[in-house]
Length: 313
Image (tube, one colour):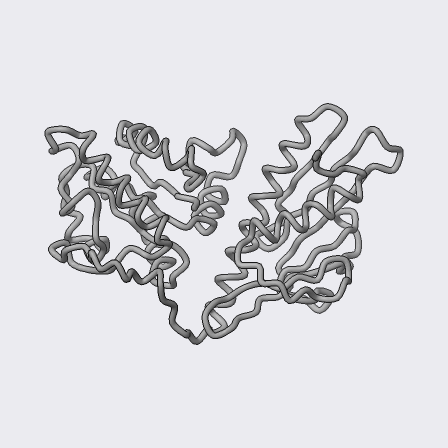
């Protein structure tokens, strides 16, 4: 799972402690954490934060008086995260690091960490408090369920028949499908941005990634070992007549007349939303794609193959 950590810069000590205590989950490959230190110089701060927030599974709010006082943390990051939480797009977890009036905030409807929402700074042994926080995060990841919406006095459920054993039928409306499509698209963007940067760092290859707008990105890669080792791709949320499917891609050079060489379509059954793929005008696959990383890998492998590049065995 990907966790977005929201914090006031006055509470960097708490960020460092959380990062340290998440070490085992990271080693196990169960969590990746994103926070604003990841933003590179020259990047658009607002776009980077917005993109990574929508792309995350967990929103970890390090709550303190400074967090509540921060217009950006409280009014922008937290409020947006709570909207996504209500829509089932991510799980908001309040982590109370300093005593404050969080119980009067919109976070009051959520079960906070550590136990009973007691601020970490007030614990005699703060490592015990952080262990309680990480244990709670681990339980969410391993059970793959949302944080319960309950009062702080509600005891945690010890029922061995956890909700993870069951699934319920659900109706999906157009708004659900739009949010799912946007989340997948942002995951595609993040994957390609990092993959192009990685390729560009390797001798013999060159890569360029550009965000055209909120709905379109483009990339170019060059394999200097081949005379014709150049490949282009433009990926976009389909909003116009030349696109097919919900997320389409073109193998044209950026800025030229756009064609469609393949697409992903948002589908649903009685239980979940997912993508089906049509890559390179091949017959549409019925395989269900439930996250953007799988879709991105399919697209990336086709992209690099056109430049004469493939993964080493």
